[in-house]
Image (tube, rainbow, N blue to C red; front, side, top):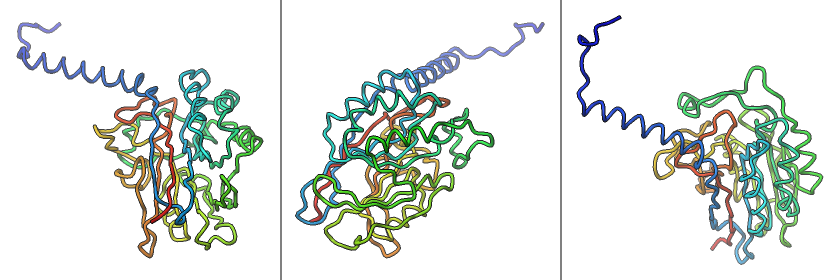
Length: 310
């Protein structure tokens, strides 16, 4: 046993500083793993993307719910979102984080499933999460697990389509929303290579039609494809807004090639010809059940009140 009298003595100020740093770290982790996960918020944006003189249109954008049975606060908050009275619900994937989540999730979304809606899926609708550190994305985007836990994506998709929501995985379709024609085009998750761009419905060159592009992961090549082919607004999720952010929601990672400054909220991408196209990336409602932390990045849904262009 060492003679403790011969060990170097740590000065009291340094010992107090170290203890204080440890306490702050533990407090931060406790906050990120409790309050940070349930401080549900609604973001409001007003992009001017509609044809001139068009009546406003309200979209509710939800993404990355990552539902686990028993999440009662999340359940109640999801049910309350119908009170926002959207004209259209857009769901950009990663709804699941547990193989038994579908029945309870569909119940939580019940009020919204009575509203016109469209959706694409994300990788975590197909396979379960694995243990990971969100800051591991600093070295590059995540990859699918070699032996994934398969999730009941077919059951989820049947629940959505059975309620009338439109499946836009690698599909294009015209819909009538609040009395206006909307042209929709979506892809399955680019993050795992499932995306196949299907073009746009016929007549998409008309100036009086709104064009919405949907993807789970806002991968650069997918965003450019939508922008180059005439999208007015692109909606995506996947980033969790960075999930663990510096103050001011400054993301450290996006888990794809999207710039960190665009990890959440409304921004723009440029087409190959220089045209600016509005992009909304949802910071998401949940997290993987194996990385249940949110810091400086509260869970959110977004109300997009679309306005006419000048």
